[in-house]
Length: 327
Image 1 (tube, helix red, strand yellow):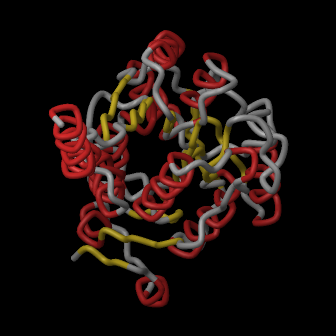
Image 2 (tube, helix red, strand yellow):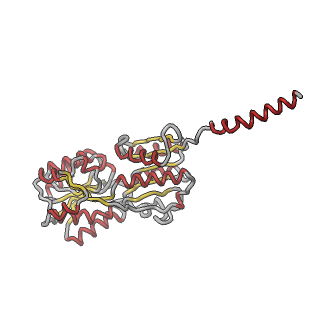
Image 3 (cartoon, one colour):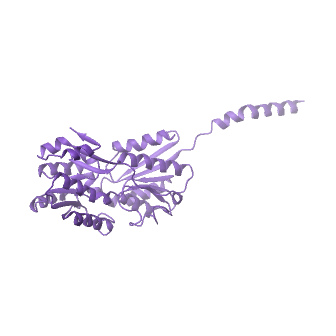
């Protein structure tokens, strides 16, 4: 009888408490590695965090984010990527072509989500946009293809425009040796414009680059989205102001830093969509099966205060087309 009573009590214990024990099982904690060329967490990174929260990922509960920053030093990316691999993160997110190249060298198995300005297929990161193959997918901002549009915009605000300075880093991967510079030159030829390449390899080169632009009498400036340039955006905007050189930037970050105008994809939209890729992969999707996407939202932002300071009158038709005008 004691045996039956013991068995019955044990059965009740299992039936009553098993669901409770199961409910107490800790939720899986996903580890997301973020590899960035920036010096640290910036407001745009908060957009990435916020979108992940909206998708159900809470830091400290079911999400652990490993941030790794190279502070603009490209030679630090390889060891940082290798560190993320050793941590066995579930997915790596990179916000620039060099970060993805470093991540690709570090792993062929951990999924990688990218946002990059260079053409991913041209640079060998994926097989094609439609069928990425391998472990990489995400978005391309294809900002280099917009350089022609930026020159058109510059010509609208400077009718007699003939010479455009192009700020670039000749050491930046995949750009000057690829299709991007050719596309920019083709666009210049079609508009009857000449280009003056202004090379910057480090933060020490900007003064000389802008001095060279002034010497050759460049009338406007565009730039490629290279790490050394983006990270020095406050200095670039300040030098453009000092030299009274109208610049059409690829990113609204330059406007926030005091730049004149920008034409490019909506960067926050790209970040939110990248977080969506991370979500799909954490839920089991394979990068090879997720086609890469191009920008769907583009915006023109004009800082009218800067225009006044450099003595530039923005035509009313250009102001009317702007998505945002800072007065």
